[in-house]
Amino acid sequence: MSRRDFEVTGITPELLARYDRPGPRYTSYPTAPHFHEGFGEESYRGRLIDAAGRPDEPLSMYLHIPFCEAHCTYCGCNVVIAPHRGPEVEYLETVERELDLLKEVLGDRRRLNQLHWGGGTPTYLSPDQCRRLFGILSDRFELTNDAEVALEADPSVTTDEHLAVLRELGFNRLSMGVQDVDPEVQKAVARPQPIERTRELVEGARRLGFTSINLDLIYGLPRQTEESFRASVRTVIDELGPDRVACFSYAHVPWIKPHQRQLDEDAMPKGWDKFRIFVGAAEEFAAAGYRFVGFDHFARPDDELALALDEGRLHRNFMGYTVMPASDQIGVGVTAIGELAGAYAANNKNLARYQRAVHDGLLPVERGIRRTAEDELRGSVIRGIICTLELDFDDVQREFGVDPAIHFADALDALAPMVEDGLVEIADRSLRVTPRGRFFLRNVCMPFDAYLAGADEKPVFSRTV
Image 1 (cartoon, rainbow, N blue to C red):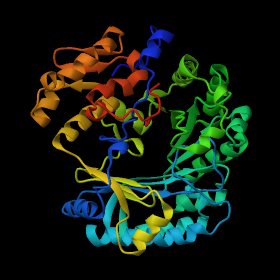
Image 2 (cartoon, helix red, strand yellow):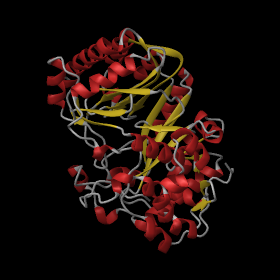
Image 3 (cartoon, one colour):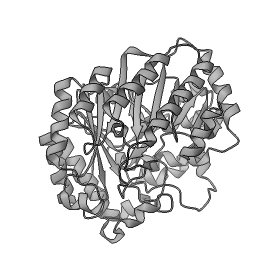
Image 4 (cartoon, rainbow, N blue to C red):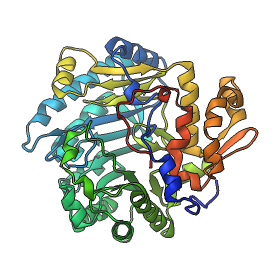
């Protein structure tokens, strides 16, 4: 792709208004709202048996640790608020039992080429508990020599001892939530986090040998302006120097996350103002040499994520953009989602029900979906657009035996306004997202999503821009 990663010229408030609407983030296809209870424990077990028949293929694993000391008002994650330690003890016992149930089906010591601890706050666990959890995992699964071993950390509860223990265990990538370094914004979202403490942890992680450090930022929060967020981005670049940055659009979904009603909605930037905040951040990252990866990530040009973008090796799953694809991803823990053998499986969201199922000897799957051949086709097209910014019709025809020009005629017709607006270019046998269209990737994918046609009017997704 061109090194001109994005282009703002020609994007006006009127153009933005045409495309700023709710839409999926496409970490899966079909997306999670279409998972159903008809796919349960028996269905999941069948998919695991299928995966067990490929013992030489490495797995990816996501492990969810749901606990947080307090609720950040912007948070959209599945968390359990536990200001006092104790609930995590039983949780670790339950995770151990779930891993035993998985091992019974998958076989002994399956290899992992990607392990990610997310939350919640994984470093809610004490260093000793982190050591214990890693031991439980490594007794049952083996990490490949080049495995990406990552976790999310909240600087406000993560200690130097945490970092030392995690690095000793083999973790090599660290992701820290920053959101915004502006004290006024932090106050507005109940997330005080002095930049000095974040800097100490970043520097400590580098000294210990963590090879990649990612920071999460969020735009669209109360009291943010384009200039204030530009200043925050400059501070992040100059003082923290991350290898990667995930710059997420704040998803205001109070009908799903009622605690978000505590935020001052009148103080939130919306529409054009919110878009300009992201543009400002993108320009600051570009000026510092970062590459624009996907629709919400930035990476240093020598980072594996940027290299994978240029080489067509970028992938996307429930953990976001990744360069360590595995044919199967196992989800462990409450709310965790896995993808294996042509299906998605989501564990129970309720902690008590999750623990009860596991202790009854059941895989704790609550919902999921088995993908159809049409799902596989459309999912491949959507992932291709999100990860490579283009679609080669001949490649699709060779892989799936259908001609996209015919099969997706309706979708291509629906993209005509985007072609006219200079967001997409469609030739005889290809589709390409333009540098201007990078800001509208979710919109470009939506015409290929068969599940959106005639969808329930009940709000489900955050806004696309």
